[in-house]
Image 1 (tube, helix red, strand yellow):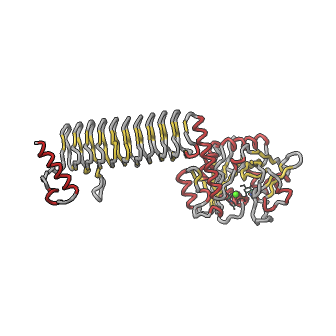
Image 2: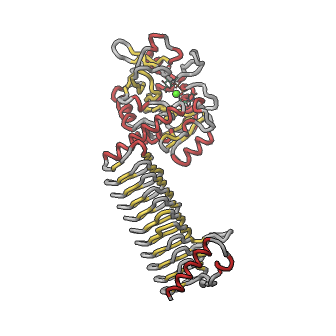
Length: 482
Ligand code: UD1
Ligand code: CA
């Protein structure tokens, strides 16, 4: 049985982040915290998912629209407590004629990026099996300061939750705390919410009070203890955010290693949740794999490499480089110190070597750009070589133009190919050429001034310099020999 509703509370300001960005939008290992929470709830397949927004509601809504278009939002104008947040959300969802008369609702907070789907699925299963009115996810730690504590009867029944600020010394010694994640029976939750008061240390409507209300009314209140207390760690400041990021990184790295990926130094390897990596890939230290990057079998990445939204095909090698939106073909090689910008496509066994920048350019099978070049807005065929220090001059100051280079072409070193230009199959260009027009297939283009020799210029114009002295000696030696 799937929950009728998943409700994520995210209206608070998150004061301790000291940020102009809403807390739940801060990223842990490359994904907004609320994005991690929604990813963990997805396998529950709830009929509806709603995020309660308040502080910075427009930014949070924009984020959700971009990444989770099916997710609803409810607005809590003033933050009058977690119980108030749930109450106004249910009211607003009811007005949008959402069917909320039966079934369960899972309530979570938007700042627990380490939650896993398994924990939430088992929490929901415990609730259904116990036929409980409410089930709270708890965890046990040595010191639960700051959290709400779980109050149990001698027989283990859950009696309620007392907030840290409202707790006495004996209650503060309790090590089992409230994660802030619960499953409720919807109609029973509604009726309990209508009985909440603000008679407590913070003057707020506490969602936690619902448990005691339900217990006193004779309903069953259950608890599920999380196996790993880290999972329910709430992030309140940037120290905790960095810690959560590290734990996420470790989790992601371990799952790749267990699936057959070699990670030489997991401590300096950051792989975001959306990255896929095949078996026998080797990842060298200090490598960052981001966005929707995919890496095929046997590729070798790093060290010191960042790939964002790239597709790396089987057996490719990427050494000490930065790439965004690039496709790196099978057994292609990139780097060191290569910058591939969006739309860079390398064919099978192609090469973009040291100090090469590419943008919106395709280089075909076996073609090479080995050294010190800029290839922008170009199509290059197969088995072509682009000489060192060649520049595709794609921009006339107003408009970008494309160039086309065929297959089997040899572009000499230090060419400028002024776009739009077309170089036909098998053509050659001389070193140092500025190619300003089309070069027909099979021809040689020489586009540079012929060399001039002005004999003894140094002896006349630079008399007395060491160059002139050395030149004179060489000329004298030459004369002696003849
Ligand atoms: C809450 C629990 C506490 C639990 C802890 C777990 C209550 C009263 N207490 O305390 O038992 O141990 O979480 O982290 O629920 N929010 C709103 N609107 C509000 C108030 C809060 O949307 O009016 C949201 C916040 O943005 C946040 C979440 O609810 O995401 C929790 O609020 P917070 O103020 O952090 O509650 P805690 O004091 O941590
Ligand atoms: Ca909190």
